[in-house]
Length: 103
Image (tube, rainbow, N blue to C red; front, side, top):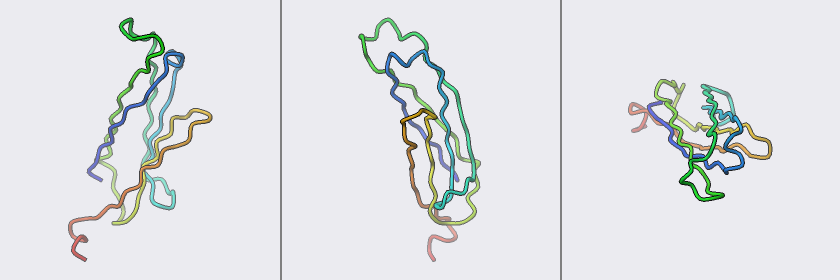
């Protein structure tokens, strides 16, 4: 696939000590899974220099460079925070291969 995904998750201070899981899926346009990765995270006690109630940022980078797409076409990356009440985020994209780009 030749791509990486970078994102930042905002975490409220009241949720900083709660262990969380995030899941990333690469799918075809009709939802067939091609690859999946997940990670756990927990911030712990907010840094003392933060203002009361200040949202904390958690950076993530996910390497999809080894994912093989079967053909040119539409695909999507689904980001799931595995949290009740929070919808998945779907990032749609179109893949084209150099040999198919001129067709």
